[in-house]
Length: 380
Image (cartoon, rainbow, N blue to C red):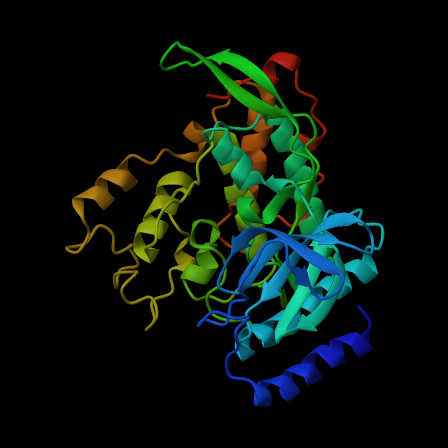
């Protein structure tokens, strides 16, 4: 997108915002009312609603000009979301300018425009997210060889965006898209039930990183809380400030989820989250246990984590108690698992200054190891 088209998007908002408060194309929350098989500008025809979030909606559309399908992100017609989309467009433009051949697996912006007060971004249509594939596969873990492929590609994307002085801040399986989700059916015997089960296994592990709507330039304003809860780094929870390493923590959480089939830290509470971290990774280092106004309910005056406390539910205590340490989650039953454990441990170092970088992680021995065919089977 050229600078001129970017400025035309912002000026059209200032004109249209004075003219309209609400119109028949929007619902009461400023979301575009999606009607299938209708024209969306004279170039696109809406074919399917793919998803909806706080930012707006994503639709599958037919592009009459290229005679192909695409995805269009339709931003809500509300000023704060329109303003945020301008940052996303600038981020996407930077990514495309610096990697025109898309060797770094980050989604490319094809087109953007302002239509009926909605800023719209056009992307290549990708098959499905890694999360949706996991869900369709009954949350069965990925083969370790696939995890190796995913991890290297994801770290390549993260290394690249960090080199652009960008932090993604919302890495999660929902934001990792499988380019081609064709799969074969594999039969196996379930260890627990001893019954024969069938799972899908991908032919191709090519992925693309998407959703740069929360991406932040290192030298620009950082909101205090970022990341989806399950993938949120300890420095964010403890209000210690955040930077590139928060993305690395998220990668560590994602890789464990690929290995086990379920999210590592399934919680919505700061104290419970930190207690779970301590079960998996051991105690939080003393120098990160800063006792201040923000953390007064997190740490006791002696520095101990204020968990459990008199408000902690029995369910929470049981849940935290049931959580296994990292060396039990990733057992060292073979060399490949040992290397995987070592990589994940380095991705999940509490201190962001000591956490491995994406560039360093790509050089890890885990990526040089070629597993035997039998190690491609079920991990559990």
